[in-house]
Image 1 (cartoon, each protein chain N blue to C red):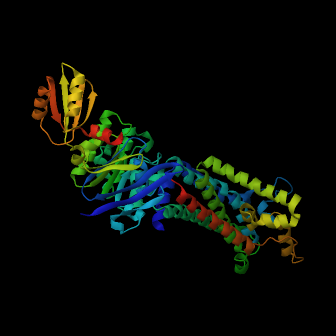
Image 2 (image 1 turned 45 degrees about the horizontal axis):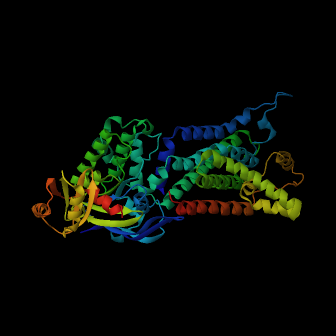
Image 3 (image 1 turned 90 degrees about the vertical axis):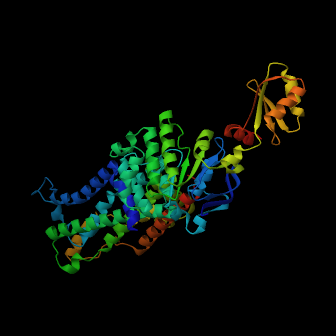
Length: 298
Length: 275
């Protein structure tokens, strides 16, 4: 596999604030990565560092196996960060022409990419007349201009209305289908769950998990139980069951996390032996959201 | 280099304010020629041109001095082209798109060089034409003497605009950056005043002041007004003049050193900052 980006022991301090702590991960060609973390967890700082706009405190990162300098590498990268930044007095086309000049690519792609993001009709309007959704779509067009090896998106749907969010996600999916490597930073789980194959979870600048999305979700599952009878007895009985790691009550359901693989039938017969009749018993995989809260609430 | 210039001029060309200011600037440069038609409303309506201000080689001195006053128009363009990158946050975007911080500073500096060079060529051509029309002396050796004023003019503009560039990066707001330059100018006078008053002799204070950027730029081309009489005396081939109007090599060096300091500091500042 080709490694596009490799981060090793990256550290960043803003004065007393330790924004990124000893972060390491690799980005391989062809995958769609999500960086997941709550607001202020260091996602944007990490992206800022690899994109040459934030200075690292210590550690290393290399693009394309260290074969080129960062700014040369960035010409093969498409990136949008936080808010779309363009020259307000220029039209969409003029802005894109400027980016072509910076990246050293011909103007040929401009019309095509504007069509991809549905901005072709407005291509000669000044940037300052655009709505937020249109600005964000122009940013995506600009990131695609050079047919990048990797597309980096930082909170691409932040601040958009549902329609805008939907449009952006459709565009991202379309790009991912073409085999472009994507690195998507987000605090929205379903966004990552829907789009990404791999995920890096960070909290307070520390890496909590990195690997495939399925593996993160795949624990031994959880069991949801409800009884019409004595709930306290049910909780105690479940806590005593040897395959169960933890028991919580959520929304009227008793939720048990499984330590080992076991079947719902076994739990049901065990509870019946204890004299508890259940009205509801479901075994399922936890959602990414539960997994995420689990990881970040340590 | 060409790529960096193209990038910068793309940004400038599509900006109406920059375009208008540049056009005004070069328009005013050209209009120096209009001085020729100024006539005093007394006596036999003597034209200013008849005073000998367009005589070679004096015209090089006079025109570069007058043209240098107009540099403030371009200063606005240059400071805002820097400060805008911060306020639009496009600096960040430029870097992400693959411009290095060094290239970014160089693209601005090259633009400064182009502006200064174009101004110099403008002044050269206009002065040459005016001189050929009005000058009393038309021998080639006289026409092309004292051309060091053009060099001084070029250096002066480069130094001045580099200062503007640096303040633009340092302060990130056009209006405040221009204000800072004014403050700096007053600061040079205060340093001079304090030194001369309390610390050293006035003469030493002046020597130190000569080392400061704005003063050094001013010294490059000394005011030509009082020389006009001297030119006449030269014309009559009588006495040598008392004031030194020539371009000093040391002043050129001082301004060049300041230019280097400003550009390099801009780079260091940009490199150290988290955007």
